[in-house]
Image (tube, rainbow, N blue to C red; front, side):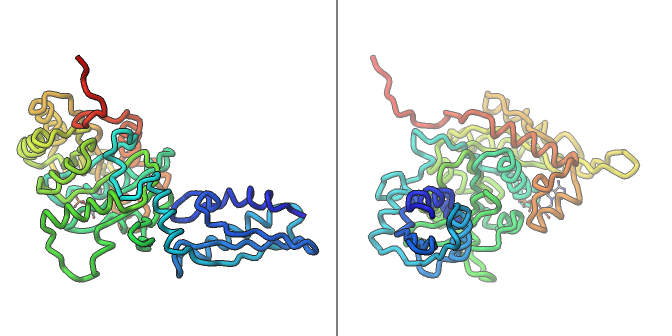
Length: 375
Ligand code: ADP
C-alpha cells in the first residue's frame, strides 16, 4: 500500500497543463486519501476556475502518476474549484510575490532576451521567420514565448498550430501552448470577422496587458511579431521593454537603404539595439541546381551595412533564408518547417540564426541599470 507522502511525491511530477508548474507547488492538491483496506487512492484537486478546459488532462495525468506506484490498484480523482482568495494567493505567487501586475521582462534582474521582429513592409515573411525561430529555439531547449502584435494579420497562432484561446484566471491570462511555446495573439481577443482599426494607444495598452497580465513563467526568450513599418508600436516596445532588441526582416529586393534608414533612426531615437538583419526569400533553388534570384540580391547585406553605418555599432546579417514551398506549407499547416526535422537549406539557416540569438547574452543597451555611479 502506498503512503500519503509517496502519493504526494508522485504528484510532484504532474504539471498544470497551462501554468507548467507541478500541481503540488500550486496548492492544487487538496487532499490525498489512501483506503486502508483496498489501497485505492483518492486525490482531491482544486482547479483554478470552474469549467477549466484542462480538467481531463489533469485527471489523466494524476491517475497515471499515482497508479504507477506499487500497491495502488487504482486512483480516483475528484475536483473542486479554488475560492477567490485562493486564486488571489496563486496569482501573487505566480507574479513572484508581487500583488500588482508588473512587466517581468523590464525588471532589472530579468534574464529573458526580448527580440522584436520588425520589417519595413508586409509580406516579407516576418511572421514566418518569427514562428520558425520560436520553434527552433524551443527545440534547442529554450523556454520561449511569442506575442503576436501584427495587427494587419494575426498569423502566428495559425503558423504555430495554436487552436485554443487563452484561459483567464480572474485578471491573469494563461497563454495557450504550441508544444512548449507560450503564444499570445491580440487576435485572440478580437471578435472574428470584425474589423478593428488599431490606433497607437490601443495597441500600447494591449501590449502592456500582454506583458504584465499574461503568465509567462521564466522565459529564456520572448519574441514579438510587430506590425510592419515603423509606427507607434516601436515606441511602445521601447517604453515597455527597454531591453528589447530589434530583428529586421527584409527581402533582397526592398529599397534597402530606405528601410535601413527608417529602422536605424527609429532604433536611435528609442535607444534600442538592433540584433541583426535576416534576409528572407533570398533565392529559389531550382531542380536543375541553379539559383533563381526571384527578388534580386544583396538587400539583406545592404540593410545590415547601412544600419552599421547609421548606428555606429556592428549590425550583422544573421542569415539568408531561401524560398521553399515546404516553408510556406509548414506555416499554412501549423507545423513550422524547422520543427519537422527538415534539413532543407531554409530550415538549417533558421536553426543557425536561432542558436546565434539564443546563445547571446542579453544586451544592456538602453536598460536602466539598478546601480548609480559613485564618486
Ligand atoms: P509578413 O509577416 O511579413 O507579412 P508572412 O510571414 O505572413 O509575412 O509571409 C507571407 C507569405 O509568404 C506567407 O504565405 C508565407 O508562408 C510565405 N513565405 C514567407 N517566407 C517564405 C519562404 N522563405 N519561402 C516560401 N514562402 C515563404
